[in-house]
Length: 422
Image (tube, rainbow, N blue to C red; front, top):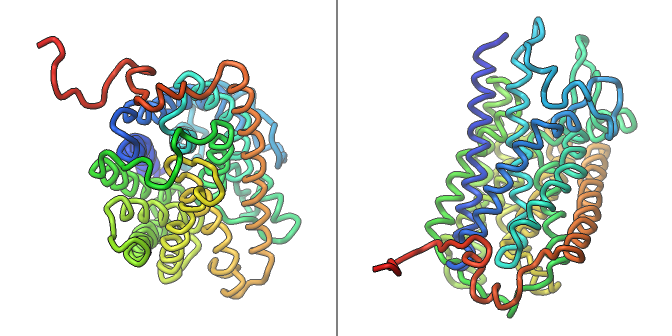
């Protein structure tokens, strides 16, 4: 067992877990002051719930035994509760539980990302029910489509999900998604769009209706996300090697370029570059580079970042033109950014991209993977959300939404400036 790579994976898992509190700060700063507790609790609720479900059965769905199956729902009953993963197999490069821990943090952050679309108007209990069902029938299977791959002794694919092995068998090349452009960002973005449609628009929905109450929170959250993203991207190599180093460098280059591009767009469009724009640009670049971080020359990573900064900055205004209320721009940043990064590989992936010595096959499989996940996640999220809304209710009352939902939902206030008992 390689203790160095094992330590690398465990540290990477800790970094990715830190991303969810970082997301809570990022989202919390964007909402109004009387909804900050509710917003942050949606992320912390996901940490608790998905962490338990992953150990009980999530891993068993996402990573079933290597039986040649390329499409879920195959489930490894021996892995329920991780009961068959406590011992380290002879010759293993790292303990199976290190990989379990690393992938658990991906499941947690993916579910938490969805919550940004329903800020200011969602019931906490209904959100937890949605999160449990969506993770079970959407995220866990999609993770299997993308991440459940392995190599035989001769270097060929021994098993894998259909996005990797299945498409490779048909087209001669599998989709590239190194760290989760499809499984995480397109998946979460599509679900966010569905929930935004199910819950409907906030009272008084229009451009500028809510001013971020705490931009320092937004910057802190973006910084924690960027810090954790090094574990997200470089850690996906599962080894401390040159590929991890390439992913690390590209995780610096792309978001840095996207940050600058977003600020330029703001300056041209609005006359002033903003701190929230800088944070949003960095996150857009991180989203776009996620699937591509190990398959691009750093120069092409910078170009991807520039494109992400411009396209996502423009995409966040689509909700006002199309009339859906994605509160914190999960669609504009994660869905659009994830699509951009995934499709970009069809053109610029090292060796296989259309412009890098390949042919159109890589672009074709990237598109199949991206839009398959988008449709699957959107449809099921819409159905789950609709059932919850029509039964127990998903949205709070309008008067509670207007007043701010922290005290109604959680009995707490984010900022207590005076003691009522004094």
